Structure formats: structure tokens, C-alpha cells
Image 1 (cartoon, each protein chain N blue to C red):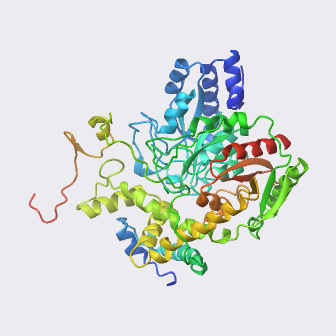
Image 2 (cartoon, helix red, strand yellow):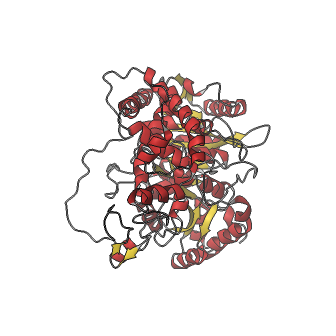
Image 3 (cartoon, one colour):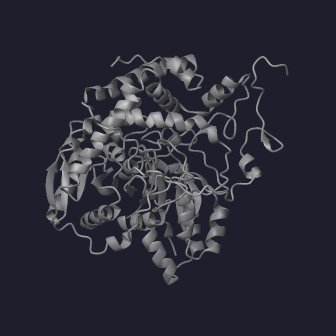
Length: 467
Length: 99
């Protein structure tokens, strides 16, 4: 059996079931591929080869999975790509890890990311550089850039990522894979290092929509360890894909997403995707999400505010880096944090502290929460009229390493993914084509109402079958 | 709304984050820019609009208050930067106290 590393979940499971190869052979193939390619791609930060093979020997159905380095797996590092967590060893499994292990996945490889998931290029990792497997002079996107590079470069069968404002969808678009951001509350975050708690979601990054459905099936559901997961039944996602068709499906085209900043080549691919859907029988309806232009401003108040509170736990006391230059309690905190955090994390902590500080709270944070309601209502109105939305994922294809230096310019990557995150609905990036000039992959985004991943994936599957 | 009056050095102190002079010089204009950008929400009419705190709202996720198995003390202390016996070891924090 050669090149088993090329397989997705569906093919790997079928091959294991038929006895074409063993879990040990499949896992060894991934190990060989990672040894061969990771030096150049830099997707993985660590890979426990012995642990992976032991798990494969113990479970003949085991399929290896790449895990973003902010999800706790007992006995493994969990650095969040930050110096502040260097040397940390997880004392427990996140709920999603317990669940994927129960669903016959092996968790041995940990993949790179922007530090604490703050970024859109994985250049903010303090622990290593990840490049785009489609063009190694370019970024893989972020923050789940290691996950996307591992899947897109065939260094993994599939991966787990997290998405707060676009961190699954944008790298999926850049690296030619499928990435699902589940609805807020669909997947437990227990054991997942918190960035912005009202937005964070764990989701699958895979080689096909069917694979995404299979992996989401393992992830989704109520967890009593995460109070934000409602006890809403989880549909059979694979079954929802059966006979997927775009015939009669109403697809909304949000006019606010087709702005000047949208790269012409990305626009052309998005237009072609819309035409593909129309040709396959979808009814295309132009819709309006009037508060879209405020979404990024709301996000860059709400997310840093929550991050500044969440990251207060890194103080050099119970775990993580402690400065040896502290002579009083203030310096213990301030110097441990100064030495441990990278520049983007520091910027966001300062921004978040500012918008929550006395005298500014009402004007920034308080007001942002109200505008967030208006953004959520925009989507609620639109989903009364259409089954799903079709839109670009990011304004451009993958950019060059080092090309974007200004933080605010970098933030614009998430222009089209942030509104759905604020509303709490579900969305997916599906490969839609390649740019003509540099042959870079570009995804198209579908967005569906909260807890309608069944509908979302059905539309995505029907589209995938057409391209 | 006041325009972009963020004082990075002061806010960093509130956030218990020591910055070098170089970091202050780099962050100050960058954060002024970001603050200026987010101030666009000032023009939205939010009269009578309730706040949204979560993408999806679960109210009162409660359970019985019962003791359950949890991490052992050794596991909980395994990542501590300093440990003495069964406790976290910290530098002296009572200012002015005799050592």
C-alpha cells in the first residue's frame, strides 16, 4: 500500500473496513509523509510517533487526525504556539478529544497556529513557521494555518481547527481544503484554550464535504462541561448528504460582500461558483445584510475584550512561564506576561483592556454588543427568505509571507467571515477554483442558520459535486 | 466619542503587561489606528436595541451540586512553575514584610 497519506476519512475508513491496509500501515504512512515533508511545510509542531503507532495497534479502526495546538490532549504539549506555554503538558482530554477518540480517531500530531489563535497567516506563531503547501512562498492563512497546511499538503487525513472570526474558513480557502465553522454552541469547548468565549468554535478541516460531515458528527452535541452547548439533537450529517442537490435551493447573495476590496480574481471565482449553483438548479436571490460594514469594528472590540479577560489566567502562578526577574507581585505578572506573549497577543490584550476600562466601556464594549444584535437580526431576517447564503471567504487568495505588516490590514482578511461568527450561525469554506495568475486555491463560503449544519453541508456537498 | 485617545503605556499597566520603550513606540500608533477604525460603530443607531452576549443563548445551564471525581493534586500541580509540598510556590508578595 503506497501513498495512504493521500486518503481522506471516507477512503481511509473504507480501506480499513475492507482490510486493504491496517491502521498501523495508515499511521506509518502519515508518519513517513510528515518526516518527508514537514521540514519544508512546518505544519506540525510535534508528532508523537510512538504514541500514534501504539494507538493504531490498539484500535484497528484508528484514523490519525492533526490537532490544533490549543486543544488539550492528555499527556501531550498544548502550547497555543506561545512561549508562555512552552513545556506545558495537558493533564486532561478536551471533550472533543474524548469524542474523536471514541469515534476511532488517533490524536498524535499537534499543528501550528497563530499564537492563541490571534492572526490570519500563522506568522504570529512563536514556535515555528508554516508555509502554504500550494505555494511555499505564501502563508497558509490562519489562525488554523497548521491544520490547513497539513490537510491541503496531504500531511494529515483530516484536522481539527478552531474558528473565532474566520480561523477555520480562511486557511481552508488558502490551502484548498474544506473547513466548517459550526454554529455557536454546537461543539463543546471544554479543554480548548479560550480566546473569545462568545465566538470560539472547534470544527473539522478535511479533504471533502463528506469527511467534514463524518468528523463533525463525532464533535457535535451537548456537553455538561460546557454550559453554552444546548441539548439540541445532532442530525445524522452523512445521511443529510444523501442525494444532495441544488435543485430548488434558495441561495442568498449578500450584496454587501461584493465590495471594492474584493480581489478581482477572487470575485471571478465567486461569480463562477454562483453560476455553477444556478446551473445546477439553485434559485439565486440578492439579499441585504445592512450592518455588515460594522461587523469588523464590533469584532475588534468584542474579541479583544474577551481575550484580555481570558488571558488574565497567564500570570506565572499556576502554570506557564514565570519570569525569574520578578521582585514583587506586580512584576511577577507583568514580566511573566511580557516575556511569554508575542506582539499580536500583547496588542489585543491592550485593546481589550482599553475598551473595557472605566470611561470607555459604554462607548465601545457596551455599544458593540448592541450593534452585534443588529448584525444577528440581519441574518435572522435573511434566513426567513433563503436556505443558505453564498459569499466569498476572504478578500484575497493566499498572500506572500511577510507581505502584510500592518495589523489593521491583516484584520481585513476576516471581513466576510466575521459577521456570521458574531451572529452564531454555521458556515463552510469549500474549494471553488484557482486564480488564473498564480494558480492559488480559492474557496467559496456557504452560510446557514444556526444549528442547520445538515442543510449547510447538503448545499456544500451538492456544490462540491459540480466543481 | 473621544477620538483615539488610547494611552498604551497606561492601559498596559492596567493589563499587568510590562512593555519595552520600543514596544510602546510601535504599539501606540498601531492601536490608535485600530481604535479609530472601531469608532465607526458610533454612527449606528442602537436606541432600544438589547445587547447580544453570545451567538446562541443558553439560559441557566445548571446541574446538581455534587462532588465528582477530579484531577489529582499531583496532576494539578504538574505544570506549576514552583511547588512546595502540595502547594504552588510563589515569590514573597507581601510588600514591606520582613523576610
